[in-house]
Length: 233
Image (cartoon, rainbow, N blue to C red; front, side):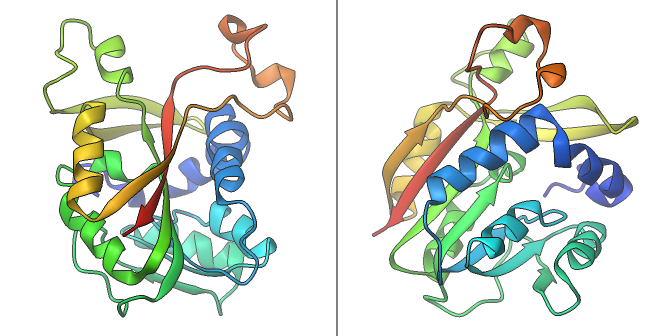
């Protein structure tokens, strides 16, 4: 992740917010698990695992999960969640990965790639560590968000931008890279992936009514993230 998005400084607050928030606990994570499907006995790499909620859910579904994150504080929290013997390490998706070729059946990358300026290099590394025909299941900020929230900007021009957030009462700044949809799909093809699924899912019906913003009353869907299932060629 970029140096100016330093999760070490707000890891505990982000992890606490992630557990039960609408965006994470009842929208993004259920959607990733739905796309993953039956993962029993799959070797899965959780790229950018954070404090480990998705890794834990995949493990509970019978997967053999390895996780990494660039934040040491996040890895420490993931170890507390998954146990000292969990296969977790500190690594950076923007650099060569410390895994052998064809090591995994699936890779999940949950809200990670929008921190990266370059996608092709990291995607090529993921392609390398995936077995042939393995899957990359990923979520990123929906490309429509940037022009919606930053009026006057050009959807078609890649751009670096920062947004202020509050996680469990703690303020934090996250820095992202916007890219239009065609730039995403071009990167997938350049790295040797074919698109199997593009998803803009609804939030979970299990979401407590009190966490649904008033503007979403009566709606089941909204645009915040876009999800892909990619197949290694």
